[in-house]
Structures are given as C-alpha cells and as structure tokens.
Amino acid sequence: MTEVTAGARVAPTIGELRAMVAGQRARGASVALVPTMGALHEGHFALVRRARELADVVVVSIFVNPLQFGANEDLDRYPRTLDADVAALTALGVDLVFAPAAAEMYPNGETETRVTAGHVGTLYEGASRPGHFDGMLTVVSKLLHIVGPDVALFGQKDAQQVFLVRRMVRDLDVPVSIEVVPTVREPDGLALSSRNRYLDPGQRAAALTLSEALRAGDAASGDGLAEVLAEGTAAFGDHDDVTLDYLVVVDPQTFLPVDDDARGEVVMLVAARVGATRLIDNATITLG
Image 1 (cartoon, rainbow, N blue to C red):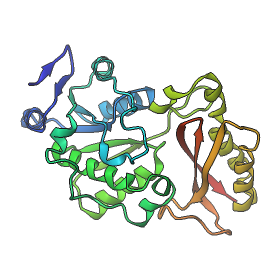
Image 2 (image 1 turned 180 degrees about the vertical axis):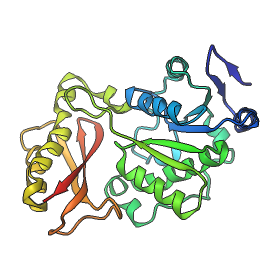
Image 3 (image 1 turned 180 degrees about the horizontal axis):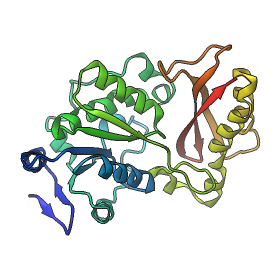
Image 4 (image 1 turned 90 degrees about the vertical axis):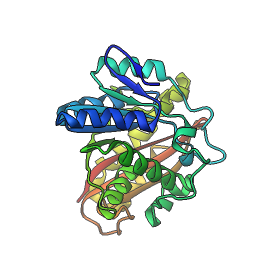
C-alpha cells in the first residue's frame, strides 16, 4: 500500500509507482529520476536539488540492488536507513519515493536476463567487482522502464558507472536525458560516499589519500602521463591503512587507458581499500 507523508509519497510496488507517475503525466508534468541505494548524504541531495530544477516531479528510487554485489561484498552490511532517507527527501520537496523490496524487483529470484556492460565493464571497478556493472545496468534499465523519466541524474563520483549508463542509453535508444552532477566533497576533499560511515577516525583521515593522489596527479599533468601516474601513486606510499587497488588515466570518450603521449582532457580514476572499506574517486585533468 502506498504510504503518504507530509510531502513525499512512498510506493513499495512497481504498479503503485507507475500509477503515481501516470497521474502526474496526465496533468502534463515532466519527470526526473534519481536512482539511489539509500543511506543518503549530501551527494545524493545535490542530485535531488538539480532534479528539482530540471523537472516538475522528482522520483527518487531507494533500492539496494543485489545484482551488483559480489559474493564477498557488503550487501548485508550495506546501510539501510529508509525512514531517515524519506524524511530528508520530503524536506527537499521530493514528490515520489520508489522503495521496492528485492522480491518486487526480482520476483523469480535474480533475473537471468541482464544488460551487459561489455569490455569496459570488466576494467577498473569491474576487474575488482566482477559482474558489478552488469547488475548495475540491469537495475538502471529496469528503473528507467518503470518510471519512464524525461531525465535521470547520476553523480560524477561514479565516473565509470556514468560512462556505462550513458552508453547503454545511447546504444539501446532509451528516451531519457542523462544529467551528471559534479562530485560533492567534504571541506577537506574526501568524496562523499555512503560507505564513509564505515570508517573510524583514523581511517577517515587515511581516506584523504585518494583525493590527495588526484591532486598530485593533476599538479603533474603538464609533464605527461608517466608523471601523473608516478605522482598519484606516490601519494599512497606513507599510509599503511590504505591499499591502492588501481590508479589509471582514461579517455573520457572510450573509458580505455590513454596512450603514453596523450594530450588534452582525460579522467584520472583511483580506487583503494581503507581498512575493510573500498572507496573510489576520480578527477578530470588536462595532460599537457
């Protein structure tokens, strides 16, 4: 049954959500979708505020998607804070919240039909989390079909995800515009993430290594790719609590690693494990 709050209406089923959106469409409203896994923070709220600027009606989905978690990842541990999330979204003027259970999205268990992320989906995050991007694209495709938004919003912090979603929308002719919102950071530079709450104070300080590596790489960008990678990697040298997974520079058009003599705008990606918590970050830099 649909739950009604002072502002946001919460739909736990696909049928209810579709009926709500149809009612808004009937009065000529445009619709924006902000897909999330909940445990909302200021990064998500930036997406919501931008969505309010772009459309008459804002739908936020809250669904911890099991398809994008591997066997040894934190699906069961992933924070679930639905009541607090809905309260925060209501304060931001969100109209509809889609909060399905896994059985609603996958009534016959994990679906055998999936969207594949291709070769890029096996690199970087995909190498560390096999199958992650297939699961992500599958649920994003489902959400786009369920909601039918005019625009869907994603955060630049998940740069590989953004690339793959944009490519899926283009390749499959999905009638939606993708809007990307810049990464939201703490004052000291740490990119906001729902997983930051796992960090103890010492790990929180050590996690700044990711953004420090990006800044070091950017500072060396005038000297070419080799210096960017060397300086970025060197930032991890003095931190025992941080284990670098990858640091790579990619072409924003293909998301493949750039050549040694590359010049112009590129994306620097970094991932590391801080204690037991895996974090990612990225920055657009210009190789000189």
